Image (tube, rainbow, N blue to C red; front, side, top):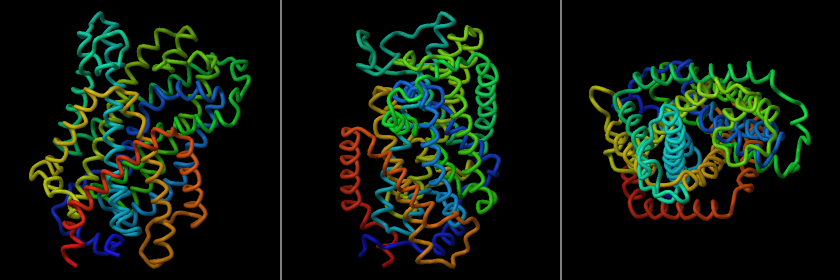
Length: 465
């Protein structure tokens, strides 16, 4: 039974208020911008092309399915985030509803998700950045352009730009969330403007004939596409990691989660429809800059460079928010005794978990420098889908066990909405490759070894029992 021990919701809130806290700097607008900053990036600038190769014009339906899965999950997140405005996101919510072991598994899972997502986007950023440099006649030595084996026929050793951008973002986060949010808000405005201009210009170059056949690979292609582009929506959950740094969390976190997801879902659907209307879907094979390709098809090369710049800026904010979420997960797990206390030490001046930030930043930077992009991207989706399913189950459990808790936001349609979140997420998990499942299981087994070998005996719940 000790594996299923739970933390008291009232006790968690009291501990967060009396401990050395993080600075409260964020508003609902900041959270919405934080969510948009995390969501709009690799998904819209890279994965739209990948999804089009398996779903064709049906990519629009793929995005709608992904948006529905995330939308149901987001409502569950919003209820928990308003009830428990504490750092740790899904990990914290699971600790209050599903027990310590499940909470550990989710926290361990999120560590993998955020670290790999940050590293993967850093590598993607590196590709766009090098392309931009090449436009000015600047070329890095081949050995420093990518990880070993990433480029067939080219001797590569280390991805220097990916390493550098990850370290720069880590330094920014270590110096404070107030400074980080200013950078994020400015960059989000720029990249959303780029997307809106693409929509305004691209819509006039759509050829409806390119949307035929609408489903060249049938619904199986649409579902496969949904499993791929689900990565595009990752980030709204990172908003809840900021709970202890929000001025009015009960009111603002649900707004930030729902608004950011709604804005991004709308943009994704419109952009994917325009892209597949300009370019026949088969031309996206092997393309990592689909929006630029669409503009070149429309003979708008003059604007393609601005889109590339927008992609570079867009990916910066994704790295920032994903790295931010990783450090706050570690902060929460350390404060509960499941990880060494060094991860929850807050800087006296900057009010950030600076040691955790620097350590994670170095790890993410090294992974980005030495590991190819395709390897990094494989595990991200399955971990997130698993976490979404568990948190939806947590909403149902807590509603039944503690119906009188002071909920500032109520997920509508309980238990049906959370059940739909579980069904959608589990279904998308079944669309992922067997190798992805194998790697995921290996990571979880490693996590269980750490838990039983270190964390279980050092848990504050165990020590105080």
